[in-house]
Amino acid sequence: MKTMVVGGAGFIGTHLCEALLNNGYDVICVDNFSLGDSDHVNHLIKNAGFTLIEADASDKTELDKVFADYTPEYVFHLAANSDIQASAGNPEVEYKNTYSTTFQILDCMRRYGVKKLFFSSTSAVYGDKRDEVLDENTSNLSPISYYGAAKLGSEALISAFTYMNDLSSLVFRFPNVIGPGLTHGVVFDFMNRLAIEPGKLRILGDGRQTKPYIYVTDLVEAIIQFMDADKGVTLYNIGVDGATSVTSIADIVAEEMGLKDVKYEYTGGEGGWKGDVPRFKYCIDKVHKAGWSAKYTSDEAVRMTVRANLGGSVRE
Ligand SMILES: NC(=O)c1ccc[n+]([C@@H]2O[C@H](COP(=O)([O-])OP(=O)(O)OC[C@H]3O[C@@H](n4cnc5c(N)ncnc54)[C@H](O)[C@@H]3O)[C@@H](O)[C@H]2O)c1
Image 1 (tube, rainbow, N blue to C red):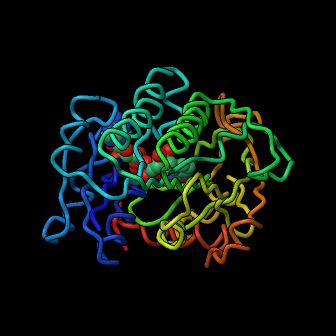
Image 2: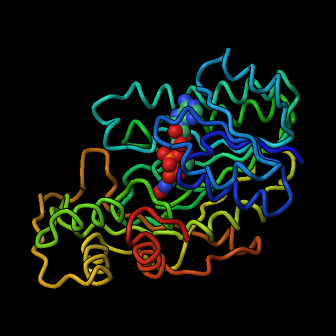
């Protein structure tokens, strides 16, 4: 089957492209390299089933040409602005790269008769619900970041396009995703900062922000396991056992890098930045009942990620 991974040269996209190829699918990887890099998928180029296309998925003409040239049977939509802190000062980037990409992809699917979609949504669609256990069916959706709003708007578009065009759409609301080849986020930042200045670490917020971290291979296995979804929208919270605080991440990173007595400097406040949700808990009963659970806990995922990425952004 011919699949298209939009945002395929990003962190998760690269792992997904690899896994799809390993499972016998052809992969057309589409990316504008705004945050991803062709270097991330260089090792896949030699694979006969792999095609890399540079295109902006928010641009109707560019994306239409890609669909005309390589009409896929399945689209995995991972393109977005993943730099949530940056978009706090520039919401337009969410409109363009997170929301408009979804519209243009869905509209191409409508025009070219593509029926199967995977969409990478996020816990950020729930907003700041603190100690509520977030449930796909019952929790209120009130995002507090432009990113969360653009993802929730994308989910709404998917709902309508799915109904109007008889699509099979699989939507996962990811927690924090980490692993080899990480390109952003707290583990990545701490490793980079400590490599430059091993004696001290600036920590955004009070360090007590506590969230679940999933290892990327666990996530990709779940995507492949559920990709053959029924008609309509199938939605899951994807999560792991446990959660890890920002200070615990700093401790794990320092320990794995062999650093002792690192001085932590907290910027203060509950969240790392405006729009950051300091903690959340997922109900993951639905995906467990459907037959998937993560192999690694949140703490294990953090430690494995640091080990895998030590010595640069090396892949496992
Ligand atoms: N990493 C996480 O913790 C996490 C958590 C929740 C949801 N997600 C979602 O998962 C997806 C993948 O995230 P990631 O961590 O791999 O981020 P990433 O930034 O590494 O990957 C996103 C990719 O999309 C590409 N892209 C952005 N705008 C584009 C456009 N207009 N046209 C074509 N390509 C475009 C970027 O260049 C990048 O390669 C994103 O949609 C993200 O919102 C990630």
